Image (cartoon, rainbow, N blue to C red; front, side, top):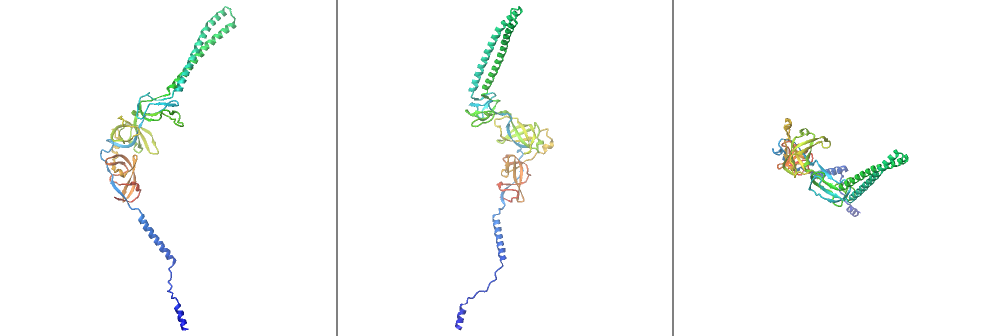
Length: 410
């Protein structure tokens, strides 16, 4: 019995004391803390640091930066031709000769193209034949009248002597009146035939296209074999014009001036023009007119300027910079208020025509600011307004910058 009890005791398995399990909410809290820690680390690793940029300081431009002495206002514009024309024929027809090329100078009434005149010549021949027929009819009517006159005169005499009856006289008079009327009708028919011939000859002349004024060909629009129509372009190779001619003596400048500064511009005011293609060439000019209306969308007023100098280098649609000069008639306060331009590196400006954007550095962050631009010179980009002297601006890849972005000097 004792042996059996000892054997049973040996078969027992000793169990460790039970460990009390932790509450489940503690596991949730722990998991959340771990996730927050991981998110913080990832955010810190992925967060962009301060953008490295170059730093430049806006400084006063050199004294010779302005386009002309005494400049009180700068503006940009284009060379335009006051007199230009897209020349076409007066009739629809097939082009057989084009006698112009781009850049060619033509004189007034010079032939620049010819249309197929086969039908027009046939119409002229027909009109001449009809005029000849009308003239022959007039000749026949006059002969008939000449023959009717003696007969009518004898009838009058015979009626006075009572040799013929009144009825016979009336018959002779009717023949005479008909002959005289026939002459009038035939004369009018000749006039109609003459007018028809003139019209046919005019149509024939219209197959020849001539230059309306002296100028230079800028566009050659039609080629031999194409159809040209002055009314509207059709399908296929139908053209509306032969070419474009520009009177180079009519070139002038058109600029858009901000309506805030239009009070500084007046008719006959002197100005200086610089072509973008020739930035070192000063061209004297003067204000022709201020167009009496404003552009609501751009808040500008268009100003026309005449060029004192004529030169082959000045071409239509060229971009220009204009400096309006202080004239003796300008008030002294206006001359004193002329803006003093600044200069910054070109890499500090996102330019768009005569305006642009710079990023001003303030307290380690940038502020986007719009500026008005002048010409680009060796010292950098001229800024006419929007910056103050000594302002620090970012230089470099400006596409990475926006309002409030943190930057560091590179």
